[in-house]
Length: 200
Length: 228
Image (tube, rainbow over all chains, first blue to last red; front, side, top):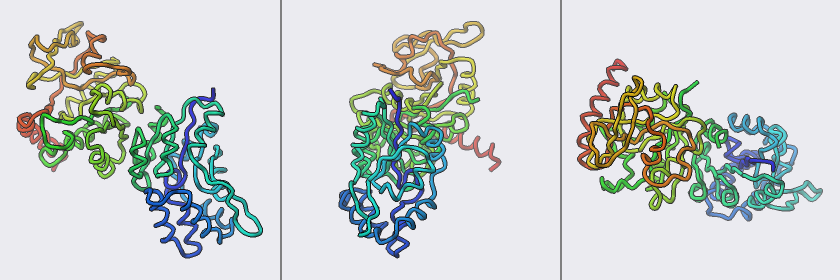
């Protein structure tokens, strides 16, 4: 058995700002992207079609430039340190694209479950959109006997449902009501979150 | 090293005897809520405070997010069918080591809480007792054993000067699988060290009235201490 796996949502949990609106500012649609992102977090729009739409819009930005932007997105220091100190048991679980979030995953040195895309001559090609409950199933198959999940949005609800301990985190913005209802704990401070994770 | 790893405040209950339509911890006494008073009294002594919410949880969660974002909130959605021991257990799951457990409807003098925390340096279990004054008390018998005041018995019928304060220090896993009242879960540790606490519990409208002069005294002592 591999013991406890710690799973973290990326946008607005590990990062102290939402990533997609940062990328969108590159092409002057940051506000529109922020509105779409917020409506998705709050559950007004289903995650998958919203994410496909956002990829379609942001696909105009070259992936190299996106990775530069992602590398400069600030991270919550406490959560980052927690992940670095347990990198073999920590996973970023995000609907965001593998080819975009690579700089953060490399900095953390942890595992990743994400949506998958590739750069093609014709442009960005989206291969799969992550269902976070699938990531939980994969972790069980890998031998983790306990999963602690941390997230803030509607798309974290399936992850919470499949985890053993679910923590709704509101460090950047209040967690969505659905995420709170699916959680056992609610926390608004990164230091407090990590204190809890160390004790759990 | 701190004596206790954290504190758990049980704030999930209905507070039906008071009938104010909100959790008792959200009642304001002399301009500040019971919850804020508790958190501020606890903060100097513990690295982490865990608040267990249930009845009208949205209200308490939003209040904590705004005024006490450093606390951990434990949800007990089954608050209608579970007891305080279960709520306290849920809150203590995010803590390791010795934990200070409290009901969310008490106002406690900071000086007496400090004394209780000091007592926990030597003992794993310390039981808070207070002057008997509530309507439906759980009386506590205390006896000096080797110069230390020890709780020897809880009783509903055998009257004594002291009652159970609904405050105690014990390991984080002590209430795992607990049934019944919290004090019943502590009976197997008796005799256990007692710590006298100066506090008021707010169960009824009458309790609330009685707590007001006590709170005003605490607030004026606090202002004097701060030189205001």
